[in-house]
Image 1 (tube, rainbow, N blue to C red):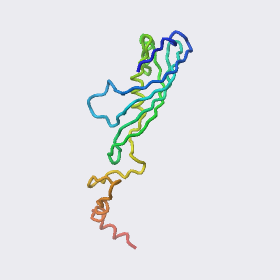
Image 2 (tube, rainbow, N blue to C red):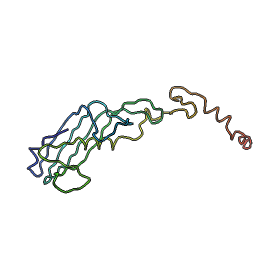
Image 3 (cartoon, helix red, strand yellow):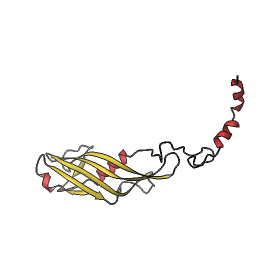
Image 4 (cartoon, rainbow, N blue to C red):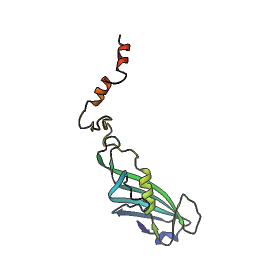
Length: 169
């Protein structure tokens, strides 16, 4: 996700609008482990770059599709996402503010900023539907598909079933 900033880099106060599509969002820093949430398909990015004395402020909107497992029932789900990104880029030989990204030359690579923004802003727990019933803790059946009856049986045969009689009126 490289953007040519030749037209704004020498002009203080200049603004550049950009629109780009990225076929695959790949994080260079992730290991070989499986991710809980994967970004699918084309990522669409629209935004602006502002030059303030060589410091570049980026404001962008990122759109795409997430593939994940429901937190409760573990069914595969695909959902759209939209993430707003506000990041600052400084020259590589400039100030060493750890909150900012670095750039050099006339090409701005926003790849890592986009990856960070997406993964930091997607929901930690995604549900297939808001009223997902999840899995039976006893037999593991998906309670959205069928009622297994394990919970009712365990309540009847539980250790505290003798206490029910104490509270009868």
